[in-house]
Length: 120
Image (cartoon, rainbow, N blue to C red):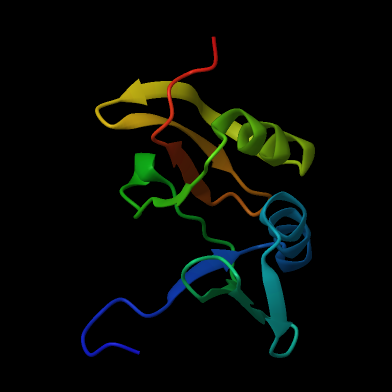
């Protein structure tokens, strides 16, 4: 752990089970339950957790947007859809790469970006 550096992130989740299933299937995150109303995740680049609550985080509402990196944006896009994620912003270019944003089963918004150019 580094002094005064971001160490952990927490999200609300109204359906912890569905959220766990989604992130396990789409990104191979690993979960450890602490009772019925909290689960911690690892293997995600930054450790964190989901707590039981009827809240959600979205960029539209001013929430922080956690963005994952992908070596293959189209493959990650397909994995998100296959796992039950809803695309909130289709793939778009931005200075430095391309990205898309999605909503996981509990309503939290995340993004995925890549440096790569679009496949021709």
